[in-house]
Length: 138
Image (cartoon, one colour):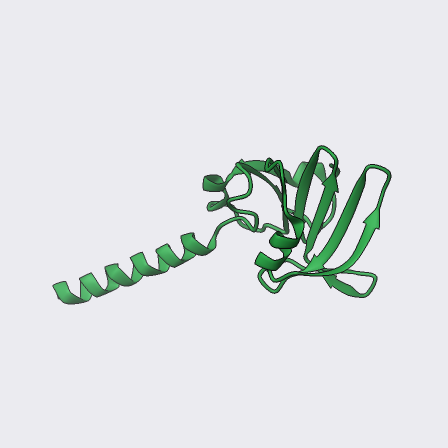
């Protein structure tokens, strides 16, 4: 009987450990706080700002974003790490946006008939990452 209880307890601990290990933000390690979107469109009422430790307890996440505090962000290196392919770019007066697809990211959005799940907005004063896109503004 004790053996069965130990096996069940071990299985529960293993499943819980796997869940917590996989329940991390897409941009984990790049920022201290994350914006989490609970709808798949821009709605500030469904947007939360939280730390990674709080992310574990959240469900129904439709998108994520973060502002990177790294001074010299290497876009090419990051895209390689994410195994991401740039689908198209869009330039504004103060920024350049890269829309990409990465098989490592679970969120997806169709834009102009193409699957996108990573947006990188590069400005003179910072970088913002969003998945599947950046909801709201930067």
